Length: 278
Image (cartoon, rainbow, N blue to C red):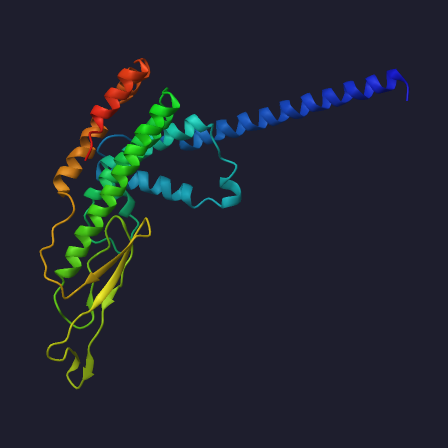
């Protein structure tokens, strides 16, 4: 094979590679454009939504969720834009936590949405932290603190649920309270008893026994239903919620920008001040 033929083949390979890369880039940009157009309506919703807006938003997100997986995987965005969409969406759910229950069947009116409000606050801050122009060590520090808040929130919510279970009346086939944030699994009902002519009854001196409740981190709680009631939670719910709200309101986009221009020592001091030891 002479030099001209080798050169021709090499040049042809380079041209084909460039054409392939250009086509791939063009297709990717086209997919990005379609995805931006698809998700653009989400940015039209913000703050506290009216019932009508909540209904429209839910119909919109339900339609997106119903797209076939093979089609959905084509709708992607660059990483930063995905994080921006996540930050906006989680903030929207933070301001309207009942949105996640709209399609629940049935939705219990007594469902406590307050833990979910703080859960979405943390998720929004995680996305914002990943977006922030911060050194890796500072970003990791903030994310670690936020994950700790998530674990504390889960533990608090599960402990509240356990107390609700203990306060449940002592009846045959008694259904447990509505599941709340942080609870991954729990018995549906307490069904111990003896079937007699008058129905399922408890013999004198009967005990309800012990049940297991698992949280979203796969921690298992052994709950003695015959133990005295009135056990306090590890930390005060109101104070925990207020602390998460304080973090959410403080870590604005402007605050992330301010942190990004501080010296390493000053930034570390500000983060420690924001997340004081428990």
